[in-house]
Length: 232
Image (cartoon, rainbow, N blue to C red; front, side, top):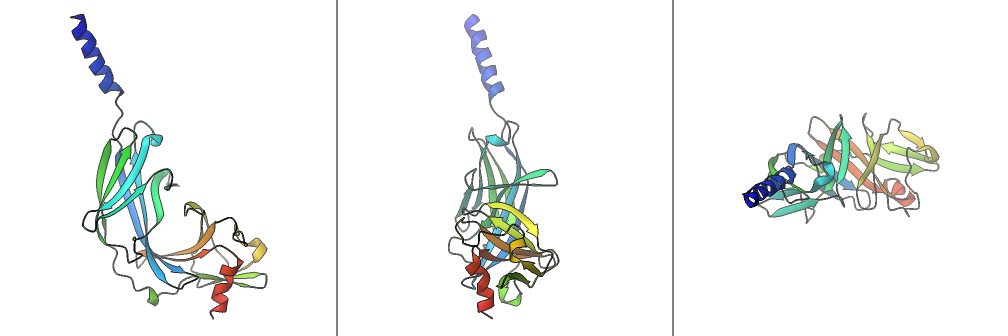
């Protein structure tokens, strides 16, 4: 009898200590078109984030996967490469710079979003990426040009943002660019003009009616700021 009671106690203790499964509350995606300031080429990037919760705490989340079975596409996001951003008191986890392996237009279709915790427990949710085809040549991308001690913002829209990323393409912060011209020394959170930090700046404009964003960059040094001027 004592042996049976001990075994029952052990089983109850084991299952009571077993962690709760993670849960995907919501997902978000947006297609952005990047114009490379050096090559002038366009590439589509996916911005993907998931709102995930785990009763054992957010640090129990081990990885988030984005998978398309049709095209055999697979991305893994973990603490080494994901971004965590807070919006309206809700924490989102994902990445802003996801590209196709061959830099082609991002595949539209049904994806599986999988979240995994430290114990290996998983949850899954479906995500449909359905943004229409984009002809980037039809749009005026924002750009930065330097003229003496002045930095000019070309094709600036009302809510133009400067996005800052580190050398590993992890998002740092953003600021709105409210002026058409800045004194170089006063430019918001100006990048290292020698390019030694590895950090980069991208200009970002969201086209609400079209449902996607325009990006130009990366701007890493003083040389990058002269490219637009020299190409005129």
